[in-house]
Image 1 (cartoon, rainbow, N blue to C red):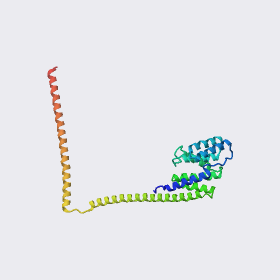
Image 2 (cartoon, one colour):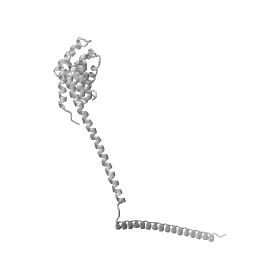
Image 3 (cartoon, rainbow, N blue to C red):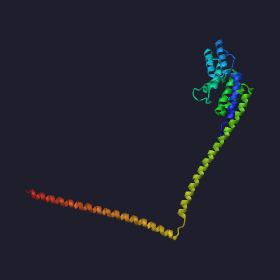
Length: 271
């Protein structure tokens, strides 16, 4: 697999910063339903954001949402401040700032929200997917952004980059799959060759003509084996006979002893 090209990552971060600073991240457009207090919180958050005090800006945007929960401007700017605080690009890594920002952007990208905020949300979701090397999702997000605003040249530029990375990724995967398949075939061929060699060796031993001396040696070896087996059998038979003779002798002695005991009783115990 090719290594991730960080120049694309840097480019996307710069583009992300540019588009947010221009018209998204510190958005001063009032919400449809607004209050003076909500606007004050947003203005204060924007001021802190421009000073790069992103955690403090987050607090102000959350206060604005407490005042007007449906404030789309406060929501988008909150997502922006969360993205600026995050040191990770993994949107699935629990309750991290970047994962919270991704959830907000997904909400704002849906129908029913302001078109400009929806477009910018898709754009930033595309950047997040790209930085995770999820190029297929990144391509889709940029396409959605362009449907919302066909004049967004930054989204179009990032779309081209993501499409190239996606094609490279697919080519790498295809190459890896081909290499894996080739390795499996080579391994199978090696095993088949080893089996064939062993079988040929066995057949060679069975079919190769033997010289007279080899035949004589083989016959002698066979006779020796048979003689060894005969000697072993004879010893077993002899041992069995000895055991049987010993048992017979033991029975005879037991009978004699029994008879002697009977005679003794007859003498010591007369009628």
